[in-house]
Amino acid sequence: MSLVLAQPYSPPLLNNLATGLSQLLRLITAMFFFWSADLYRQTRYVGRVPKQWAGGVAAWFVFGAMLFGSRAVNSPGYLLSSVLAAGAGTMYGAVLLERRMIGAGLVSFVLYGVAISNFAAGFAPGLSATDSFGFQIFVLNAVLSVFGALGVHLLIFEDMTYELRLTNRRLETAQQELVQAAITDPLTGCHNRRFLEQVSDRELQRHERFKLPMSLLFIDIDRFKAINDSLGHEAGDHVLVYVARFLKRHIREADYVFRWGGDEFLVLITCTEEEAKRKARQLKAAFDAAPEAVDLPPGIGLSVGFKEVPAGTTDLMPVVHEADERMYQDKGKR
Image 1: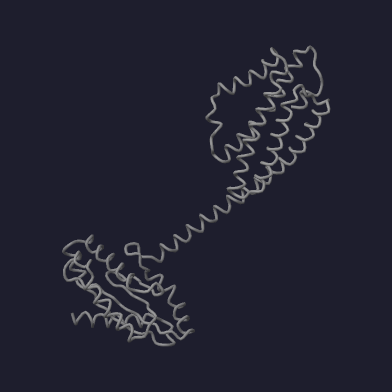
Image 2: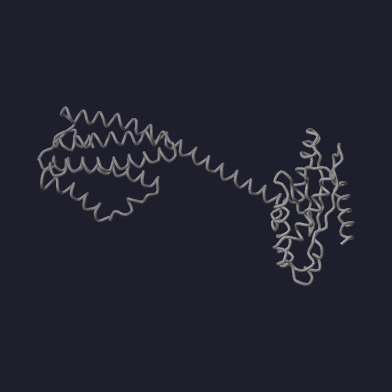
């Protein structure tokens, strides 16, 4: 822009054309800054401007200067570029507020400075690089351009790190979802056997360290096979989901509910064997008395076995088998 006006031209028509081209380059520069902010924030303002308008503005700065003189394009060029620079600065300022990017703030500051300098120059038409005020505007824009380049490079770096953080968060979320899927029964939402293997050592050590009692409840659904055979697997799945929800409602969040397999559930609970026995009775009574049970096939009930985990236990499987045997003893009483 400045080089075009660095020397006078003869005849005056060429001098006017040079002024028009300089203002057109100024306007294009401001437009590119506005377009960059528009693309970055995906606001798509530029796409809404008809191409005929852009062509008309460009033609005016070329031919208007030749036909009507430099005053016809000088002030409009400065003022339009000032508006575009201020708009771009506002959008980069929004990026600063939205993403806390210092580079965007620096670019916004530079663009506001350019907007102010162009606005001031818009009321002093006929500027050239040789007069005092025109030289001051040139120096100011040169300094702002240096800071603008610094801000753009900083913004690019911050944008890359921002994208990396987003990608890392997505990967962490996907990993957590995979881990959750690996330890959760997809039908009932209870923990599965794999999670019991993961959590058993930790819980045994925790209860041993704090001298806390721990017991197992082994739960089986009565007449489940007959329901599957007579009413189909869909009805069986409905019963499994209902039982899982029932157990989660009646078991503390600090304890664990596992789907052991088929129609069997395992509960890892912090209590003594006597308390586990009372809990087993409460579960059976609450299940039989639940109002929702009327929607279940007739004859549905729970058989529950219980067993306290002895102190010093390092493997839960023998305790699980013993609770399983007691569950069959309870089933034989029904």
